[in-house]
Length: 143
Image (cartoon, rainbow, N blue to C red; front, side):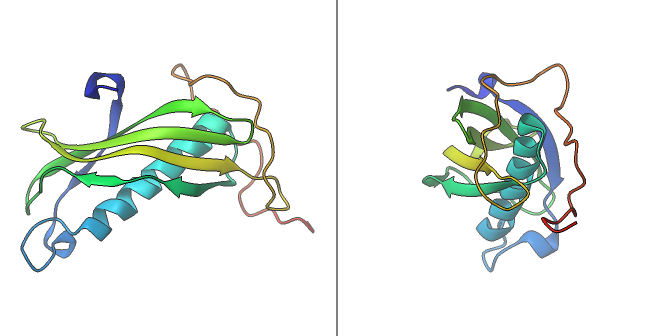
């Protein structure tokens, strides 16, 4: 899958608190941002606020970012399972377009109110509009 297949939506500014001891972007910060972005993407693709990370494949750190860099994160759905959504992620420098990180597979599972996997009923990506969850995220199984 090429970068052109990914929609880049989220942008981050690399700040001092995001750096490691080498003065470059700390991988843990970047992974936190990707997981959060992937969760939002999964929630809006599946229409369910209870989608959770199940699996992240090999993470390929291609290049580095430094303080002041503007980066952008992109995701695209690559496969819909019965209860899951698989996506691909790429992070790149906004100015140079140089790839910083790629992840071939991030899998989210659609959960019901009891926290069990539940079929979501989707087979394709929504581009026209988000599938906004129809329930409140803080609802519990007992009311």
